Image (cartoon, rainbow, N blue to C red; front, side):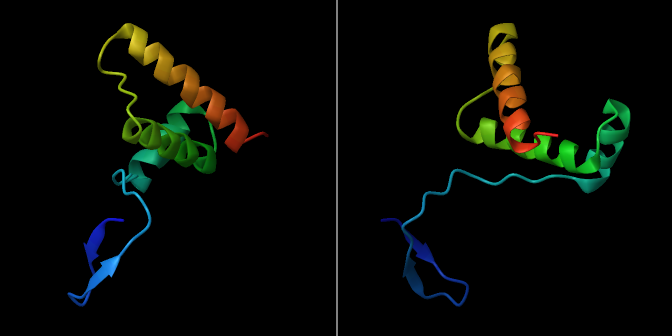
Length: 84
């Protein structure tokens, strides 16, 4: 159980695991949604999935094979998250 420092400085135990943060620029998401011809909701969902995949170890910048693997998983998860 990791020990974390609370907002007021007190020690607090946390049972969760922090992998990192995912930050999404609404302005960029809006531009990309328009460019890709998808809804803002779908683009933000795609960006969230993309960020989470990075947090668990996927890296499209390692090479073509890794990029394809990540893209395939991103598309699979996007179909589950946005079934429309």
